[in-house]
Image 1 (cartoon, helix red, strand yellow):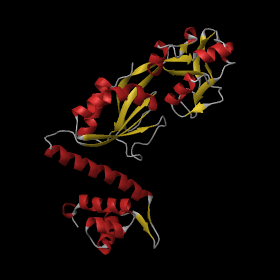
Image 2 (spheres, rainbow, N blue to C red):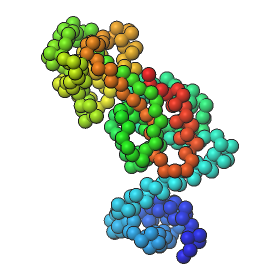
Image 3 (tube, rainbow, N blue to C red):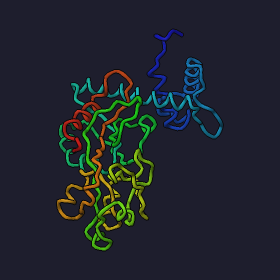
Image 4 (cartoon, rainbow, N blue to C red):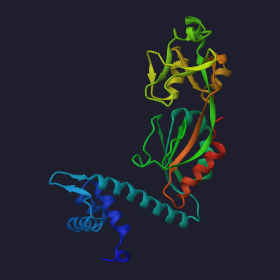
Length: 301
C-alpha cells in the first residue's frame, strides 16, 4: 500500500486506545469498531512498520519495547494535532493541558506567586504541576516543560535560562543557641549538616579553606528529597543546611533563619533552566505561552 493511502493518524489513534484501554475489546468500544477490526488494524500496522508492537495473550496485552516507543511518540503527535486544531478554532488562543515538572522550592517561591496572572491571561490552559527534585525523563513522564537547577548536560532537550541563585548556609536561632555558631570548617564538622537523599553534581558543601576550596560532605541524621523539605527541617532546628538564597530570603529577613560562615562561601551559583523536548517544528502554543511567561516572570535571582 502506498504511503499516501495509509491513514497514519487513524492508526495511531486506534493503537493509542488499545494501550490506554488495556486491550482490543475495550479499544473497539471506544473507537466504535469490532474487536476483530481493531486486531487486524494493529496487525497491518505491525506489518507496515516491520516490528511487533504488542505481545498478545489470552490474559493480558503487553507492549514490546518498540511498542512503548511508538506509543509515546504517537501520543505526543496526537496531542500536538489536537492542540493545532484547538488553536485554529480559537484564533491562536493557547488552549489545552500543560504538564509541568519542577522542584518544590521553585514551585513555592517563584511559580506560585506569578501563576494566577498566567492563568488569567490564558483561560484555555490547565496546568498539571508535578513537584520533585528528581531529574525525570520528559518523554517517559509525558512532561511538556521541566524547570531544573544545576548545570545543563548535552542532550536533546532545549533549555531556556531562568536566572541563577547564590547559595547560603543557614540555621535557626534555636539550633544555634543550643549547639553554637560555627566559626570555621573544623567547627562545622561537629554540626548536623542536612542534605539531599540523592546524588547531586556536587555532593557536599563547597567551602573556602586554606587558600583553596574543599567539599565538606553532608553529615546529618536527616536527609530529604527536595530543597523545600530541607528548608522546613532547618526552620524546625534539625541542623544547618546549604540552600538556594531565593528560598530563604524571607526567612532571613524575618529572623527565622540566620546565615553562618559567609566568609567561607566560595561564591558558586546555581543556574535554573526551563527545559522541553526539541523535536523540531513549532512548539504547541500552550507550551510556548508558558515558556515565554516563565522567561519574563519566573526568573530566579
